[in-house]
Image (cartoon, rainbow, N blue to C red):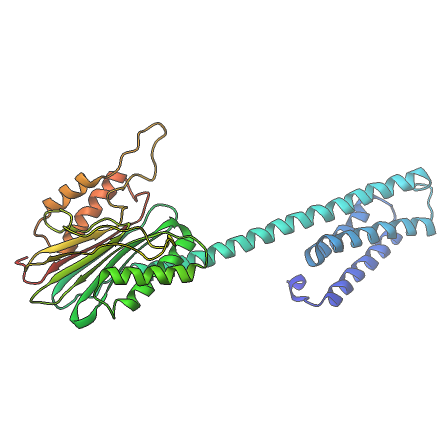
Length: 371
């Protein structure tokens, strides 16, 4: 399109001037001084609005109106004289200036919507990239563990759920599940930062309490005064023969045994990360996995699962711990992936589709199971 290829203001004003001169010649030579002939002046006015917005449209409208008046004063006619001339001038001015203002407003709205759509597309692309990093499709199996992961997105806004399975010191494995309070891009960015910090620190410490404290300090420095709460549970699993599990939670659900759905003993859940109330205080719990035993780690989207489309007047009903525990017990002894499939199927059936909140699950079983 010619209008888009002309980029220099000088060239654009040259085009406007040529169009106005052509309009002058058309008005001067027309056999009738009708309004229809003058309306050709809308062409340069619309182009001025496109190129120079309101100021250009108003200047061009004023020039087009002035040209009509000057032409009729230089070459008076019986049809347009006196009051009739000024009424005709007013009529054209209203049309010229009105169209200039209207086109400018429409163009501004169109450009604003274009920028908004572009920003949303960029945000969506970033969210998809962050989601792939926060909940990768495949978790790397450890030599002494069978591990399965699952992520069920919520219907609507993206939240900040994430999981991490990474090497720990001395051949151990660190498993982390977390949830940033809130939704959208900022929550996902915060989750990505916390996950990256935990992945870095986990290689140097097998103490889950220390790992949470390091992540809390990093989050406080990164947030720079912005409050962002993050609930996290960390587990470190020693390699055989001990398979000792140390775990600690910051505002997060306590992990369950994979077959009995009972919470792990010991420990004390501390406050979420990001509160900024001094050093994080929490206590670790410990247990040992015998061959074939397993653990389930999850975000609150499991027990607080609900439909994203609740009918007005219908009481709020959550998926609940009892329903989740029953499904876990029914799948007792099954491979970790099968347990997660059972839970996700039960939750989505209960919610009638995607739930109202993200659900992140990690299940693991010590090698040596008969299944």
